[in-house]
Length: 388
Image 1 (tube, rainbow, N blue to C red):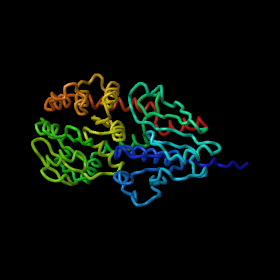
Image 2: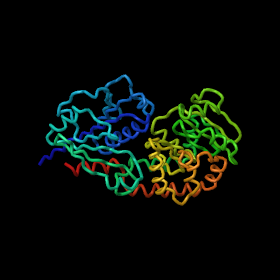
Image 3: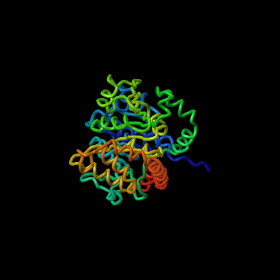
Image 4: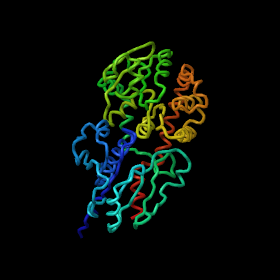
């Protein structure tokens, strides 16, 4: 008896870019993984192709519709666009409550069966998300129900984005010194810079980069800081004494700062794997740093009334409650100490460095705990299919 294969599930992701690279970074990783590992037909709607191009150079910013890595990418420019039920995906994901087009929602209500509608929320370690994860939200007028799906750090959340082969690739890369050296050399890093304590720096403009550079200049060990072009540009330009363009470097005291070109996502993973300490920001690079198994400092996206400090402290309470130097560094970096005028990077840095092995061990153990929660894309699909 001939049994037909079930039709491929279709899925649409709607992404409005707020945090330059983090929003599209998350959505692009999710889209690729759903297509590659789960054979889902994915359409990614994104409103900012220029930011997308920075992390995926193959993106054509002048094209309204294109296909990359078997994912259909549509430039989302018209909130008033019209849709028919035939154009609606089986699973619809709005990233971080981004208000998908009203006509798309109307068409969703006309579908038989109706699509699964998920709001993929932002990442937080706060305890309340466990009670809100997968909660339904009925539409006030239409016969539709949206469910909230929260990434997170426990088994009562959706977990974190993690490709099936990422850990194997990381271990293979980090266990091959020649591959590490060749990768760094392609970015312009010299042999002497490779032997120093290597730091990748990705942060928001308000970070205390100038003060930290001064502490690194006086460090007891040589430090190589690798910073992507356009990041912390004022502080980097001041240190270099010239425009912070990719390929430029300068050394003062124990510190060498080198400006790197912006790299595609797979190479950014390798950069995190190759460094001894990673400064990351927002959500996407924050998650990738955790999968790197290396010490990291998170620069959280700033919110009104310092609500981001609550989120930061909730994460630190889970991640490093017993490592005072790591907590102090993170709080100072985010302007979350009680007495900001007393921040002394010349003492914070040596204290952190003295605990670097302990912090490294914590990073490795933390990663193992995260693996127990499964990966976000598989958890999301499992939940979506349970609603059918």
